[in-house]
Length: 193
Image (tube, rainbow, N blue to C red; front, side, top):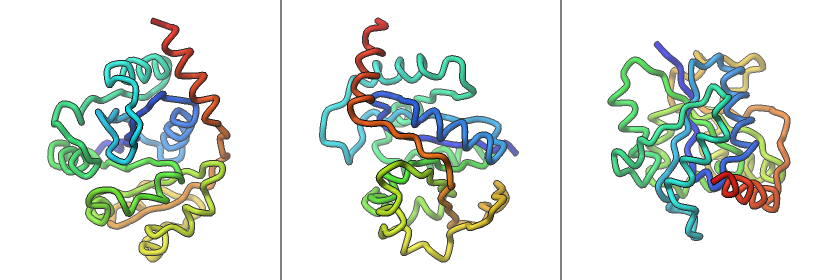
């Protein structure tokens, strides 16, 4: 069985925080692969992002020397929600154990995701600390509701997540990246055209 980490998002733009948690997850869990799932449109984001094509291209640019695969599954299956994508992956890739990767900022509003409770029963979730969001994440609805399913092992292993629901927060070094830095990176990526 392969073990693959999934990082979903708008990636507008992809940045060093995305790379960091992907590479950390690969190392910590000895994952075979990391897949980035570029969403056509994040339903919780109001601002219109860069075009899907531009975001995919930027993901390919930033990961070209990294062990990360850019997957266009959501557009292929016309998925608007992570739950649809996860259901599809679990039913079409029986020989793979998937884990969902996210930053602490996503845990804060996770309960607003479509079928959030079903997602918790479909896939283990690994949360990475993010500067400025950790305290809110630890006090979030999801963190409290699923407190009995949190894995708190010092030497965490992929096998710890085989029984669902299961989730954890990794005590990683936090990457500080400001909105200004993200906008600057977006402009740098656009100038590579």
